[in-house]
Amino acid sequence: MAEMKFVAFAGSLRRASYNRGLIRAAVDLAPTGITIDAFDLGDLPLYNQDIEDAGEPVAVVAFKQALARADALLVATPEYNHGVPGVLKNAIDWASRPRVTSPLRDKAVAVMGASPGHESTARAQAQLRDAFVFTGACVMPLPELLVGGCGRSLRPGRQPDGSRSARLTGRAHRFVAGMDCAHRPPTRGGLTGPTELGVKRIDRDAQA
View 1 (cartoon, rainbow, N blue to C red):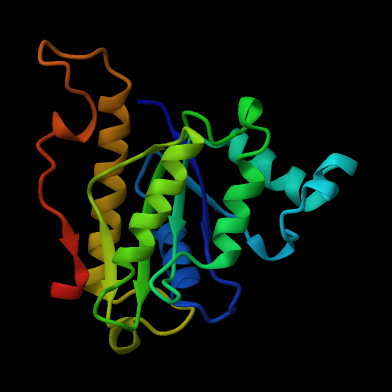
View 2 (view 1 turned 120 degrees about the horizontal axis):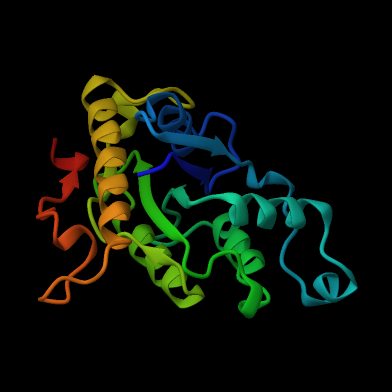
């Protein structure tokens, strides 16, 4: 499989965010054959169709162009009040418009998240997957990466500890394998993607 280019972004604007730390770790730990470019969502305005109709802001155009050039997306989400942060939902709303030319259509997406709590962003990730599916993106169902209790083992804005670094690296490898499989013709049983690879185990760092 040829080298893949990922665009990665976190649903937090806080400079010392745990999830921005996950993105930086992904950039540093990317396996051979993968290039990961981080994108900051801080310059995106709140979605407003009046603004869209008058001409998309420069930040929105840059965001959409980055998504269009990428082979896949890597998204790290916090969990606020059992849900997806507004900054992340806002980015998806901009990228999904207009639907017929959206750079999210048929785009492979991997989701992960970190939280000081024990639920480790499970609800936010579920909501995020639903939103991406509606846009026509191809969200990888497995493997999952849920980093719980990160206040004890993930310093704000820094890389994860050794065990979580290994999990993050392994997840990237399995995601690429799933991407390769997803591009193959269906087998006799009609299965493609991670199911063919026997990827059944869910990585739940909250249990590590």
